[in-house]
Structures are given as structure tokens and as C-alpha cells.
Image 1 (cartoon, helix red, strand yellow):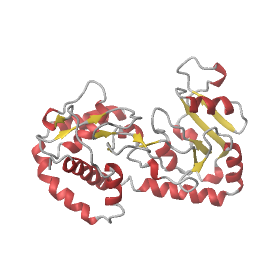
Image 2 (image 1 turned 45 degrees about the vertical axis):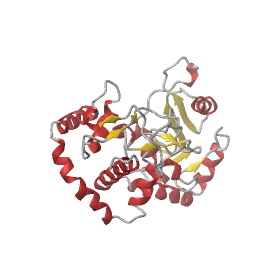
Image 3 (image 1 turned 180 degrees about the horizontal axis):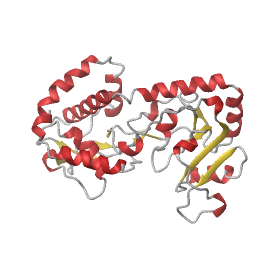
Length: 306
């Protein structure tokens, strides 16, 4: 139902002539001045990373930017902002879970935290990734256990499940997708059920961990190794043991960290509060729109199109 509503909303928008959006662009960009530089400029600069590259020969004119057979959600998330700009401008983009640096200036959803500067981050695949929760369960009333569910398609996830699937303090298991060890398989567990646990593990998949955003908006502690990829959520700016509980890549200290924060709940609450404060900056719909337009404006200026 959520997906259907998304498609209906954006298809309806596509029938509105771009002219009406383009007339509003300058006034929207002027509104950026109402926000402090540490909010507006800091975020815009993070996403564009001081652009100095060039467009590839595959860049397309905005008038030719059409809905693809695959990546429709990505397209709608991007076109809702490109429609504010003139048709003669060009963009280059790569939809999907991007794990590698780009050879030329490219709009992406994700990029390596250690990146080359050619990847321009926009808020893409937002319906899937930007889900936040209104958690009503206090940390002290949650189960004193760790929880994780997901598909095993990378070694980092296989290692987590293999080491903790049968541990009494963990509800960790694989949602069967491939021919993994059948002992590791556990049934799907909803977000609402996961929120009953004090510790929720966030593990990167093809790129970023989808569950990171809703965990950090909850009253549970996010347990996570150092992330390798980043998106609009600016994972590369998250501080270990400030915004999340840092665990080693091999998870060898996870049980120790669980015990520590069970006994030191004031410290746990400090991290939870910092995580929720981080999430709050992404909840202002108007701000998100203006930042998106500013990123595109910088993209077009850097390629000498504006």
C-alpha cells in the first residue's frame, strides 16, 4: 500500500508542467539563507564534496530524463527536484546500491566513505531507507538482548549469524534466501518486535544498512561496526560511541558491550539521545527539499551549465 501511494503521488506530479516548478526555484533557493550555515552549507558541501570533475559523454539532457524500466523509485526521487531546472541542463546518474567511486561526476544514492569526489549524493530510494519510528518503549523496559534479521549475502553478515544464532542473549538469524546452514534460519521479525530489544545490530549489506535510520530514531541502542558506505544520512559523520555503539568488524566485543550498557544505562541513554538528535535534522520536509535543490544547483554550476 505504501508503494502504491508513492507511485500514484509521483505519477500525478508528472502531469503538472515543469514551468510551475521552475518559476518557484529562485524563491526556494533564497529561503536557504534563513537556515544557519552549519545546517545548510555543511550538509550541501558534504553531499557535493567540492566538485571539480566533469560530466561523462553519457550525461542526459533533463528533457530526455525519462522513467527507466528499473529503478523507478530512484527516478521519481530525483525527478521531483530536477523538474525545477531548465531542460537544456544535463545530468549523469547511477541508480542502485553503488559501492564504487565514479570516474566522472555522477548522482548516486550511496558512495564509499573514502571516495574520489565524483559521487554526488542525493536522497534516493527514500521510501525504503528513510523510515523512522515513534518508539514508546523506554530503554529500561526493553529485553536485555541483541536482535538482528536479514539476508546473508556478504561475509560480514554470515559471520554475525554464525557466531550468535544460538546465543541465549541474542535473537539473531538469517531470513532464508540462499542455501545457508538451515540452523541459522529464523522467521521474519517486524520492526515493532525488534523495538522490544535494548540492542539492535546494524550491518551493511550491498552498501549501507537499511535499518540504521529507524534504529537511531528509536529508544534502542544501535550496535554497528565502522560503516564503509554513506548516503544522504551522512553515515561518514557518525561518531562511534556517540551516535552508536561501535563494535569490531568480527563482533568479538559485542557481548562485552551489551553487558556494559546494560549496567550503565545513563551512558546508553546519552547515545540514544545523540542518535535521535542526528535523525531530527532529516525530518524537516522543507529543509530537505531546499538542500536537494542546492545540491543540484551546485552540480550544474560545477559543470559550467549555470
